[in-house]
Image (cartoon, rainbow, N blue to C red; front, side):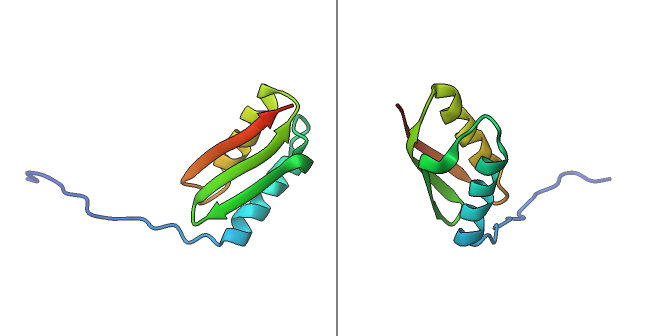
Length: 83
């Protein structure tokens, strides 16, 4: 029988920065509860940074959630300010 299994597989996402930004921006547009016009999205590989202003803490959380749901995102830094 099998005495053990060792997994040495590494998955490296191949997502373009432009594609990642547009996917997140499109998610903002689709969200009826999030007004994304004052949010700037920057991406470096799979790491995303959100900057700008939102109207409530709820919108800030929605923006983070939308960014995390984009394919290829490995990290989100939320620097949004509630105004």
